Each structure stands twice: as structure tokens, then as C-alpha cells.
Amino acid sequence: MFEGHDPYLVALSVAIASLGGYTGFALAARIRNTPGVSNRVLLAGAAAFLAVGIWTMHFVGMLAAPLPPDTVYLVLPTIISFLICALVVGISLFFVSVGEPKLRRVASSAVLLGVGIASMHYVGIHGLAGSFGIVHDPTMVFLSVVVAIVTAYGGLRAFLAQPEGARLIVSSIVFGMAVSGMHYTAMLGMHFEPLTGAAHHHGGGLAASQQMLSIIVAVLCFVIAAGFLLSLVPDSRRQAPVAVEQVSPPVAPVGAEPLVAATASPRPMAPLGGLGQPPRAPVPRLPVESADGTHFIDTANVRSVRADAHYTRVHDGTRERMCPWSISEAEAQLDPSLFLRVHRSHIVAIPHIALVRKEGDGAVLELDGPSPHRVPVSRAKIAEVKARLGLANRRQA
Image (cartoon, rainbow, N blue to C red):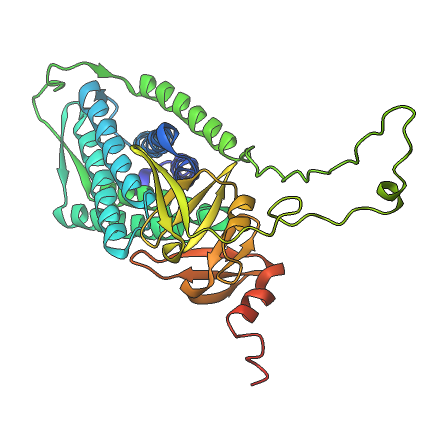
């Protein structure tokens, strides 16, 4: 059965699953940066693209298989297979995209995703109709589910490690392998048996021919490719630079004596607290927004602050919550002896740093708490971070 597959359609099915995975994971990566309704819209979009990628890969793989010439596809099981896929993918993404998922949650999501992919496959296979019966090898059925779960776990771990750049590409490729590996492993254990003396068995339901399915699959391939190209467009939201207000000397009225002292030399810069005022004392609490109003977090519990457009996200060791301050405002308000801006988009609490590790040109910090999380450090800030942690002279010691 497996030897008769069209190799070009097999390659196309793997590519479609990977492109759908990249688009879905790229949208899921933005969930952490988008509050409110937009968060749910992104989650729905990510689940939809992943589900379409899985479903389309499955039927491209079916077109690649040497099916009996009288095969048709029952519409109801085909639609149900897609709905099952979209549901389990959405739940899995929700588990891994909200908060800081631990090993148990990631493993549970991988099991759910793998079982969902397998369920979609076998429900879709049940939609095949014709003058034949389908027999499955139980061992290959079990193996196909295991392949789906294991590779789904690898894809989720790669995505959670760094949902951008090369890691996002790796996670999408692993996801494509998960879907394709499950499908072709299951097809390897599937056999057709002719029904002697029996007419076509459609079960009385609405059916579609392979030509009609080819048209539908071609349209969905276009949708996935378009979504993939759109996902490559960078996010236009950028942290706006903080404008420095310049104080101009008052304009002298006509005929008045010029202010020589004001133009002789520039005035010194005023402290942060304002003109003629002492610098502001560090705030003891940070405001965070929720559905029922504004709450306040003690700075002693703050692990990190992350820029999110014109606002920030404050992590208290358990989860992130939106703060109405900009990253520059948060840097100005927090105690500089306890907090350090290690990246243009990240501030960390020095006492809560549990791990520092070199990564590429920069570094990564892990902050403690019930849900530890990691923060990138720019190359220009590595020396200062090491100095604050007492590591500057570690090699000389």
C-alpha cells in the first residue's frame, strides 16, 4: 500500500503541514503580547491554521495514495474530522500559550494534540466509501498514535523554548513531521479488502469525488501559503522612543532688555523629579490591570517587566499582567539598586535571578518563582549583569 504513493504529493503534504505549523505557531507566539479580545482572536486563528494544515496534509496524503478508482469521500465524516482537529489543537495551544507551562502541562498538551491528530485521521479514513472494506493493523494504529504524541511534544518544546527565528522554523518542521509521520504510519497499516458481490456503499450520505476533493485541497493550500507569507510580515508595533522635552528660555517682550544670563550658557538638565525638585523615590508598588479594575503588586514580588507596545507586562513569578506604564516609565519608577534594564524590552529584578547562561551573542536569565521564566540579555548589557551578580572577576579568581 505505502509503496504506491506519489512521492511528489507526499513531499507536498509534509510541506503543507509544516507551513500550517509555522503560521499557527507564529500567531500563537503573539498571544503573550496581546491582551483581551485580541488574545482570543489570535488563539482562534492559530488553532484554525494548525487545524487546516493538519486536515489538508491528511487529504493531500490521501490523494497521494493508490486508492481504489471508485473511492468517494463522505462529506459528514470529513467535516467532523476537521472539527475534531480544530478543537483539540485549540485546547492544546491554550494550555501552552497562557502562563508559563510546566513539563506536565506540555506533556498533557502533546498527548491531547497527538491523540487529536490520530482521531482526525481515522475519522477521515472512515469517510472513504466504495466497494471495499478497510482493515487496520492494531500494532500500526498504536504506533501511529505514539509517533504523533512524541513528535508533537518535540514541536511544542521547540516552540516554547524560543517562539521566533530558527526555533520557530524547527518547531514547524517537527510539527509537519508529527502530522505526516502519524498519517503515513497509519496508512502503512491500512489495507483495502474488496466486497465481493456488493455495490458501492455510501451509507446514504452526501459524497464528494476525488476531483472535487482536489479542488478543495488546492484552495486550502493557497490559504495556508497566504497565511504563511503574512506571518512573515514583522509586527508593526514598536516601542516609541521617549521624547525629551526641551525647556526654552522665555521670549523677552519687544523693547525689553535681553536676558544675557539666560543665553550665555545652557542650563543644566533638571533631575527626574522635575525642575527644581529632587529625584523621585522608587515606588513600592506597580499598578496592573484586570477585568475588575486596577490592582497593585509589591515591587519585592516583581520578577521582570516586559515591553508591550506602549504598555508593559509585569511578571510576579506566577503569571504576567498588563501594566499601564511604558518600559521607560517603569525603569524610572523602579529602584535602580534592585532592578536593571537588560534589554530594550526587558527589566529584571536582580535578587530574583536564579540562572544566567550564554546564548548566541547575548545571554539568558532565568528568574525564580512558582513558574520560572527566562528573559534575554542584550550583548551590550552582559558585562553589567555579571558585575551586578558578582561574576565580573570570576575567571581571575
